[in-house]
Each structure stands twice: as structure tokens, then as C-alpha cells.
Image (cartoon, rainbow, N blue to C red; front, side):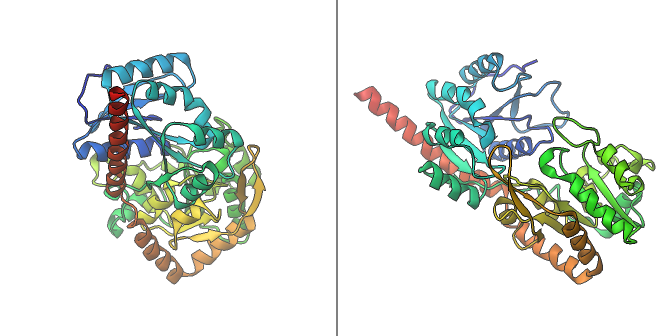
Length: 413
């Protein structure tokens, strides 16, 4: 059920996104920007789509309007109109993928009709994007923002309009290196003691290509690396077009070498984050010996920066674009085969033997692991939610100033 909202003043900013206290990348980005804007004395309201249930017990710096309806539904449009009329924001910011843009057009047009400036922060899960998306992005009366230089340059060239670079980041108070004693405590709680842990963090969706990681692990296990253990921080059952991981693991014959959260990995119990001084999810990242990100494509991939911030060596798909840019020098970029997706964008697939060879190389070379940790920490220091929010505010102020000047000219005429 939607939460009631109250009227606010001219410093109000509205955010339209996935649930900001959920687990999606868009939700994390919406939450992080909302918190930073709130720290800068903006009143922030988030219109959270596909979000039902109750608000988290942890206090938020912004207010949330829960909408359980999908973005393209008439009830969502009606509630969003009510939301804008009640909140009367200075601007509304959308965090979305280019592949969803057509679904959001009615809400964008509604915002413009109500006199609200719209900023559209777009990520590309692959490029080239469809002609339809390019046509829409070229014509929409919005300010376009992008999370990477690659996406910024691509959209500028294809849409023939200005695109502002507003990067994403990672919460460095949450994702950080644990001291050795804390890390060993987490590993004991997860039964990781004597194992070489390969961590894969992210949703079980097709793009993440988790079966290729499992095949790479199978190669190493059959070659004698019997202390290897793949920790898949995702759902093991098939949902929303994901992989039937339980079945795949069984067919590969590696069930004893793979574990999931809330499964047999945690027979000894997991540390409760409410009783410790470090975050549970981030601690699990830190507990791994390396992190593998073998996505076939990605708009930013927050998991790259999360691994680097936790001081864990990183292997990442070399997509010659967004992921490679975000990883910087702080990762081993895995050579990948390029192919077209069903949507017509390029996808990048890392072969299992490449994954196995890279894991073996990293396992055998302590100096390489140390170098990757150091370079990763240097890279992640370049990304800051505070700096990104300050850049965003500058754009909001310039956009709304132009918008107000235009209104005054129209009124005078």
C-alpha cells in the first residue's frame, strides 16, 4: 500500500526508481544518491516502483512512497501524478536502463506536463542499443546523465545531444577491508576456514553467466584443486529467466564444492550484522579469496567497486566498455568472445578454460594478488557518492534555473 506523503518546499527532489532499500543495482544507486542529497539539506522523496511490504527499520534520510504496481500500469501513472502534485518537486531524477526507456515515457511526459524538470540517468547493459531507444532518448525533453565515460560518449554520438557524466560509487564505510582477525571470524562462521573461496555476487540472471564460472571451477577441481569452493551469493532456484543452478551443479558433479547463502554453507551459523561492527554482506565479500564478475555485459556493475573496496582480488569480463572502464587497473580483465544478444547489442562471453586459467594464475601468484588489491583500492578511491551528488546538484540547479527562466519568458509573452 502506498505511503502518505506531505507537501514540501522548493528544495524538494523526487527520485523515481526500483525499491531503494532492495538489492538491485538501481535500488542501491537511488538510495545512495537520495541519502547524499538529504545530507545536503534537500528534501528527498523516492517513488519506489514494484515495491510492496513495509519500510525498513533502519532510519532513512529521505521519504519513500511505495508503489506495488509496475511502471507501465495505469495505477502506477495515477499514483505518480498524485505523488508529484503532493510533493511538488524541483526536479525528478530517474535511474533506469536504456532497455526500459519506452516503459517510462508516460511518467516522464507526465512530469514535464506538470512543469517538473526531469533528469534521466541512463545505463546501457550493452551497446549498440535499439533504434527505438535512440529515437526516444534523442527526443525526450529531459537532461541526460550517464554513469560511465563509455556510455556518455556513446549517447552523445548516437543521440546528438548533451549528456552529462555522473558516476556511481560504493559506500566505503560499508565496503572496506576487514582486519585479519575479523575476516577470519567471518570465514569460520561461513565454514570457509581451509578453502580457497571464489565469490560470485549478484542476482541469478542470464547476464551474470554463472554456469561458465561453475564450468571453470569444475576444470580446476578435476585437475586437483580440491580446496576450491565457489560461493554464489544469489538464489539457487530459477527465477525471472535465471539459471537452474542446483541442476547445473549436480550435472557438473561439483555439489560438494559450491554453496549459497542460507544453504549448507552456513550450517555453523552466520554472523548477525546487528551484533557486529561490520556489515554482513560486505563481510562476505571480504571473506572471499577472489571475486569473479563474468557478466556478459553491464552498465556499471557496482560489484566491481565493492570487491575492490573490500581488498579482494578481482577477475572481470573485458567488455571493452563499461565494466573494463569501472575496473580500471584493479582487475584481471578476462578475454571474451563477442556475440549479438537477442536485442541486437553486443555481449561478451568468457570461456570456462579462460576462467580456470585465470583462477589458477591468481592462486599461484601471491604478489599478483597483492598488486591487484593495491590497484583496486587506488581505483575505488576515484569514486565517491558525495562528489557524484555534488555534481548532480550543480546540474539540477542549472536545469531548473533555465526552466524557471523559460517559464518567466512565456509568462511575459
